[in-house]
Amino acid sequence: MRLTARFWIDAYLARLRLADIPAFVTAHGDDHAGAVLVKMNTLDGQAVLYQRSFDLMTGARRWTVLSEGEERAMDEAVARQRGFDPDLWVVEVEDRQGRHLLDEPGLAE
Image (cartoon, rainbow, N blue to C red; front, side, top):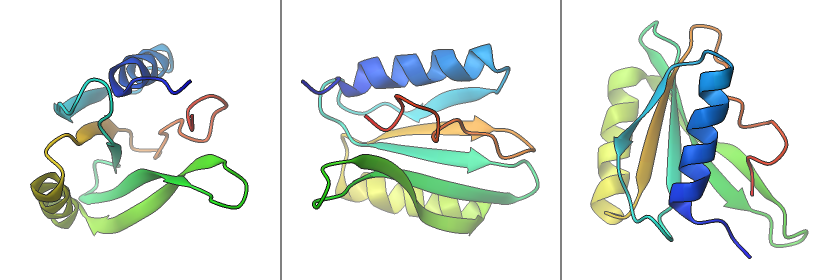
């Protein structure tokens, strides 16, 4: 059984809070089936967008880089994605060290 998008977002934000990493929801998507983008803002004018991908061969899910570059360009990319998918969630993580915790166990599901 898949977790709802809202449940995953709440768990992710809680994990980030425990690690003292600021994060917030910048776009609220569909609570049940919305896709999720994570914008990693390193507070130096640069950002990376992550999306969850699905490996058809193994069935595994993992986070991959959708785009990276100037923060303004990443905001424009998010706006384009939201234009295609209004149910999309966007979480912005702010950390100078680039910590996003997406590689931790349990966050790819």
